[in-house]
Length: 258
Ligand SMILES: C[S@@+](CC[C@H](N)C(=O)[O-])C[C@H]1O[C@@H](n2cnc3c(N)ncnc32)[C@H](O)[C@@H]1O
Image (tube, rainbow, N blue to C red):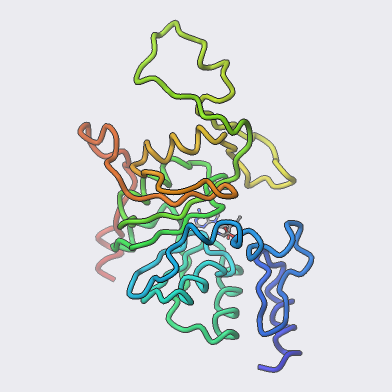
């Protein structure tokens, strides 16, 4: 494809959230976060295994595929990128084709339907999606229950103090002190808009992020670095009382028969 045709395709599929360098043509050169996500990635790249040879990767909310393509470059045998927005998926396919990166599958699939993949992945990437979800803990539970095989690279928008208050195992009904402590695990609910974006629903503090990860069965191995954590699957607390999720794991019988 010639440069003029490529520029036309980039414009047709815009606007872009990922600024990708497609053979010298930038997809979002005026991004409000600078050279995003390459600039961000440089601040936490050390958390990700450098060699993913033979490993499988699921990139949830893959957008234009920056992380999917990067994991493929690190040798991953299988990379699946999912997103609920067809325009972003078209961007990702254009990027992979233009850069000649094969073997990455981009699919329209909601985070809430990851059970339909029927497969666990060595590395799950769940970056920049949690705060866009109305049901964030359900999403983490579904990832843990259906697709997380070992590692998860995780990031969410975080605000509030960097201090993390130690939560007790239990509290008295009348005990109100911890609710006054800004370092206690919290997640603010955004009823209207945040940063001019009505799809931002929840903004946790650092303690809240780390508590939610533990509560859904992830142990933090490294981080945070620029809000990013590398986690590993761990026991799911309270799982002796049954599964946390009640969401369909697989396609219905009718769908499966088609
Ligand atoms: C802020 S972008 C983050 C993109 C990329 N993961 C990153 O960190 O640069 C959020 C992405 O999540 C996708 N998304 C939002 N809700 C989703 C859902 N329910 N299921 C799958 N993807 C979703 C959006 O379409 C968008 O591409």
